[in-house]
Length: 324
Image (cartoon, rainbow, N blue to C red; front, side):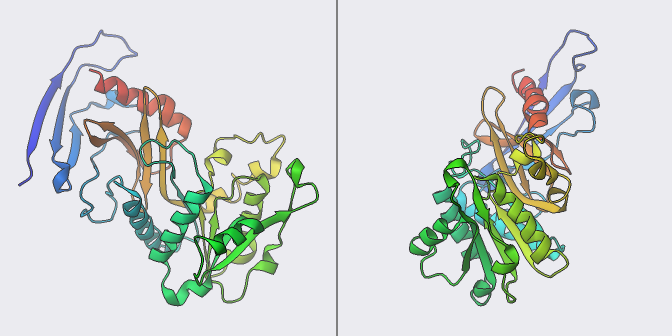
């Protein structure tokens, strides 16, 4: 039987227009041992920023929870990969052609970014083994950033696999200065290809430009699908690359990114107001905090919030509540 507790918290605040009005908060916690939930209710609308809502979310349990719109935060990488697999399958059923999977490889709870290429390569192999059936392996083309990584993959993680391994760029004479030669995607794609998976295209700015070319020339207006795996696309979303110096890269926010569905996403925020932004398609975007050995959903919405909004507005608001 699931055990539950109810805690009533009340508090008084100095009356000012900038502070939330007094209210009663009811916190119900259920044992996560049985796939439990944590629910937060009793908030007045003035407690949360405009157009936001505090929501009921599930927390990590024993993995028995059904995969749907209320997906628990994964307890380990095998569970993460299974959630990502189902998310991609559901997105494809909804005719999504361009998809993003993004999560830290340095640790689910502690890794703020830190996409390690070797770890990503191993996780990509495990994801493909789960997602791609044996008969479709030869129709799946995996693009690595450079030809040298294809050689490494064939000799290590992807040794003996039937997947087609390819590359986005190749070294040029000016490689030491950050220049590489783009590969014409129409020359790399074969007629029987059905699925493209692009591995961590973020080290060189040209890599994402080639990804756009791949989508435009080989996926758009076809039945093919394209998955970007740990591409650190937040760098483009956030304006990390100044548009003045990288106009083509900045243009992706208007051309490529609006066509993309982020089907699986984890981003951790460290510091005093730490937390996690989590999404598993087709569910909403959730902001989670780890409180008392449980993940609590403090906010959710249908569209992706900016990392700046989560760090500076949503998490500090929830942090102030949990300090009461």
